[in-house]
Image (cartoon, rainbow, N blue to C red; front, side, top):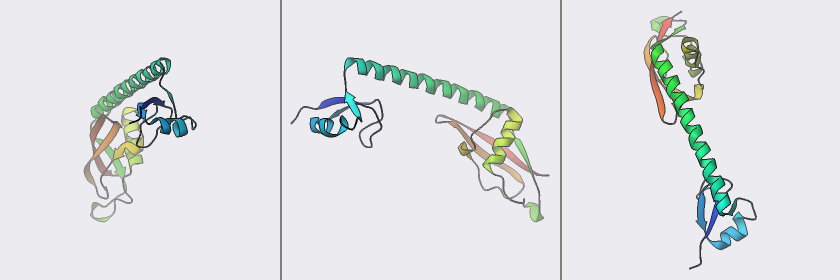
Length: 152
């Protein structure tokens, strides 16, 4: 069996690895495809040090983002329940629906925290009442909040 070659990936490659990963591949795959396409470079001690520094920077950035998410979580939990006023029709049915944008605006008004509405998960809200919404602030940090829909 042929000797394997160690390379450091410059880009994400499906089924092989992410950018910066150290991979072992067949010499022909490295020589004929990965290196000419500039998808990978030979693993030298200098490049390995660069990769390690880049990983450490990414890890520090992720820790900072997680700390910010924890602060946002504390501020949102401190705010407690949110009230959203909507026009009401018959049988306590509201006109339209409560959207993630409505919730993001209510959170910003209550806490001053700006959130990405794409991280908010809500049930279908078509009537007055209290509902629970989940807000994903980070891959490891999520918070549940009560939403009270009241007549305007």
